[in-house]
Length: 97
Image (cartoon, rainbow, N blue to C red; front, side):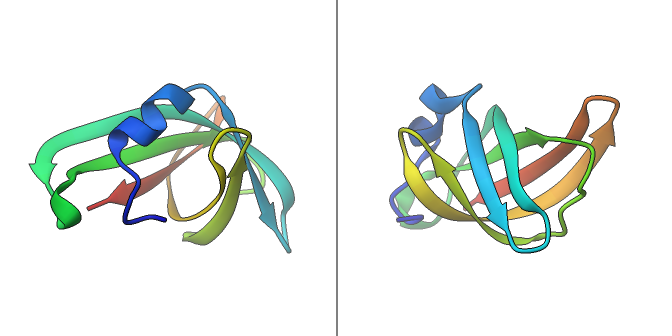
């Protein structure tokens, strides 16, 4: 499925909840905070893009592939990297090339 998703797949989902299930952390709710496009072409002739998800301050999830579920998109496995922590929580990034 990841080879078929585009920036446009996620733009309407901005602000929506994605539920992450992890053995160590349990269920963690992430909100799709930003959909960022680069304007550059990546593989499969799609624009490279990045997603920023906001989650709680704790737990701080390590970078790896996680299964996320969304009411509209269903389940998707995405490689997430923690990139920032502030007073509102953690920000995780997924990059698509």
